[in-house]
Image 1 (cartoon, rainbow, N blue to C red):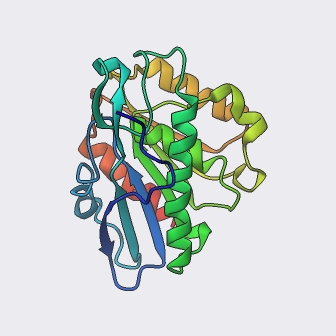
Image 2: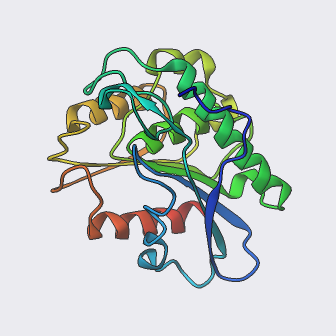
Length: 225
C-alpha cells in the first residue's frame, strides 16, 4: 500500500463548547486509533462557561506500519522500532503539512492563530510538537501527552522564533511501557535547554490518560485560552 498523499484533506470529528467559538484545539490521536478516540474527553474537561472552543479530532491516514509487520492502520508516520532509533522523517514532515492545513482551515474560519492549541497523544503528541514549534504564527499552546520530541536534533535550526515561548504541557505515565518515562523526560529536558516554557506532570499510570491528568489538562487549557 502506498503512503497517502500529504496534500489530502484529513477527515475530522468536531465538538464545540459554547456558542460561536473563538478558539480551537486540534487534537491528534495515537497509533492505530482514530479521531473518535479522544472525543469523549471534551465533556470531561468541564471547561469554564466563558470559553467557546471548537475541538477538532482528525483521523490519521491509513498506512503500513513497520513495527506491526507492515500492517496498514491509521498512523501519522511510520515507526521502525520501539524505544527510539531511526525516525521516519519523511512521514513526520508529511504529517506536519497535514496539520498545517488544519491550522489554515481554522484561520479561514476566523480563529486567530494565537487562539489555536495543538494537542496529541503518543504519536499524535509527537506530531503536535513537530508542527507547533515550527509553525510561523504564534499559537496558544502545544499539549504533548505520553509522547516524545521527534527529530530533536533538527529542532534548533528549524524552530520558529514566533513560537519560541509557546506554552507546552507535557504529561506522561510513570509506568508507560510503550514510550518509557526516561525518553519523555529527555524530550522535556531538550525543550528546556532551548528555553521553552514546559509544564510537566507525571502520573501513576501506563500509556493512558487518567482523571487527574484530565483535570490538569482542563486547567492548562483554561490558562492558555
